[in-house]
Length: 213
Image (tube, rainbow, N blue to C red; front, side, top):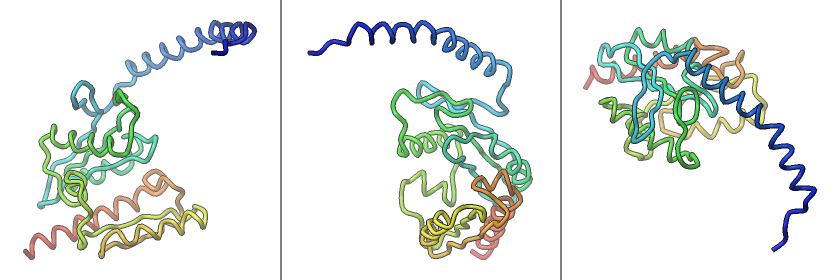
């Protein structure tokens, strides 16, 4: 077995000694910020860790609960311009996935399946009865063919990105696309009203369908 050269060992040791104060400082600053800036919402325990959840509003007119899912690296803060308006119509939930925002990191390498499992457990622990697309996540089944889906696509993305968005139009038979021309990728931040209007449209259609049943 080859051994690490003495010079390389010395360099590694020197870097570790120099870098330790900065690492310790970063840890202290992170702990201070978590203590100073309290999250808006609650902690919901899942096994031996918790997820940070911001639940607002109450169900009205038979509207289902709206679950706001952040993009990779995002948090509940991404929805600060959208959630208050939707909360006037129904119960709305935004949450930080494990390892992001104020949620504790998982003990193992996170995967998409872990994210689905966490959301399923989160809804169960909050005694929520998910409906529409949340119900599909809970049961881990394909989307129903008659489920209404609105795809919001940012108009200021590259042409290649826009082309990839067209693949989402086959999610269900009732999938439609709205191109938000004056927005970059995070539409809920650049053009929050577009998101609010799309959710309102789905809630209205869901209410009409429930009334006609």
